[in-house]
Each structure stands twice: as structure tokens, then as C-alpha cells.
Image (tube, rainbow over all chains, first blue to last red; front, top):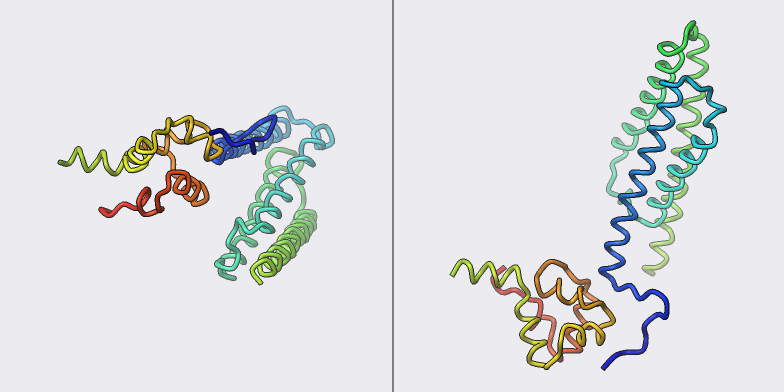
Length: 153
Length: 75
């Protein structure tokens, strides 16, 4: 009665895969949260310089960048249903959050803090980086949508 | 009556009955569908929603239609 099309090493069925994917997703999420926690702890509690935890920061940044890009590319986020208003709102929210983080980092946890001119320079850098990230995401979502449309043809 | 309805909706009795009619154990049905015994057990208990592909596979193995096994007239 047995079929012979089983894989020799690990024969996972759809339920096994579903459970594994769920567990992996939760563990991945917890790892990312832990890494963010480590960065905040090192920066604000221990007061380490950025170069001392640059490796973790780079991994985290690249990881989150590619995670969202992959989600957009493979069609996990229904980008076509998102309104332009919402996208613009997210863009400005990211700028506000970035500015708040920078202000907290330089003017609350460090003294003497930055002058208004220096803060303005930082703000321009924040806007530039967030715009680049958004451009990156837009390119990935366009490419992903094109791929899906091609598959549907 | 309410208990029976609960049993009917929470447990896939149709699948269990069809499997028994074919004189198959959970393990045998699982082997024929390329899944684990636990997966068949959970479907019968109503604790796992199989994909359409697996539903079709099970229906073919048990020589039934999808409606016969997975359609709930009460819903």
C-alpha cells in the first residue's frame, strides 16, 4: 500500500512544513527583537560607541531591508491595495521616528548636544536615507508585481 | 442534538467513515496520501485544515468527491 515517492532524508508533509514555518517565523521575530534590544542596551545603557556594535547593526539593517524587499517582491504585502496616502503617511512617520531617535541619541543621552544647524544636517541625511530605502522598496514591489503578472499571462 | 451538531462540525466524521469503509487505518491512508499519520488524525479531529491539494489526494484515495468528504451542508 505504501507509495515510493518519499524523500530519503526528511519527508515533511504540508502540516509539518506549516508548523515548521510558524515556529521559524516566531523564532526569527524573537531574534530580531533581541538584536534590537542588544543594540539599545549597548548604546544607551552601557554607552558604547557605534563602532563597537557596528556588526550587529549592519546585520540587522541589511536583514530588515531584505526581509521587507522579499515580502514585497514575492507578493506577501498587497501593495496595490495600499493607498498613496498611506504610503506617504508611512514615509513621514519614518522620518519623524528617525529624527526623534537622532534627537534622543545626541541631545538627551549625550552632552553637549548638537546645535540646530547640526541637527538640520542630520535631518537631511535621515530624509535621504529613508527616501533611498523607499525607492529600493518601490523598485522591488514593481519587479515583484511584474513577475506575478508575467506568471499570470 | 446540540452536542451532535458540535461533533459534526468539529470532527470530520465523513472522512473517518469513508476511511473505515475502505478498510484503511490512519497510517495506511497517510502513506497513500504522502502525509504523516498525525496529519490524518488531526484532519479527522477537525484540528487541521488541509490544503486543497491534500483534500483532492484524500478524495481520490478514498474514491469520493470533495463534496462527500469536506462539504458541510449546515454552514
